[in-house]
Image 1 (cartoon, rainbow, N blue to C red):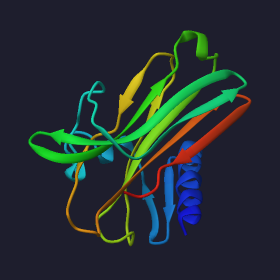
Image 2: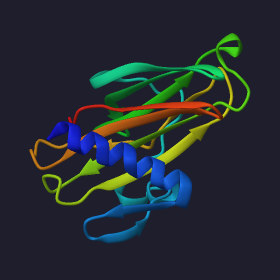
Image 3: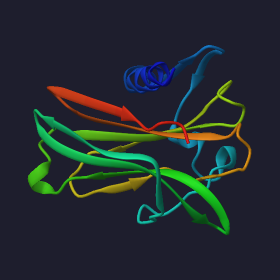
Image 4: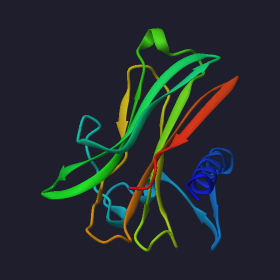
Amino acid sequence: MRSVRRIFSVGAAAFMLGAGLLAGSSGVAQAAASDCTGGANGFTDIPDSLSGQGVAGAGALVISSPHAVASWAMQAGNVGGRQAGWGVLSTGGAGNWGPGAGALVWMNVTNDNHRSTIVCGPFEVKSAGTRITTPAYPTSSSSSRAFQVCAVLYGPGESTDTCSPWW
């Protein structure tokens, strides 16, 4: 089941890139970074420099055409006096970033055992040596709330993607 969710999340990101829409089982909805910035939908804007505890996954993405490297992680920590989770993406230095490369990161949040999902992002990076975070969302002791972070690294000749397990 996890691979089906990953395929859906990655497919949704590709669809958002091409059409700016997220197709879901309940119809078509607009998915945009504005859905979770500025306090929208219970999210809290955080500085791109904020670091927390790594949870549920992290990794690196590499493409060779053009050469580019990016790392991603799901993190959790204190945001405004509350525990919260967020996604982070960092691009490699200038020697590790070719022309035309870009990367996306977004966070999926469910509050109802995956019956519906809030998509926070995608947030895009197009230069080397950049770190970006998604807005943070409060954690909960409820088992119906879960988080997932996804990332894509792309260039004119290649792309690669990944999603963390739900946490």
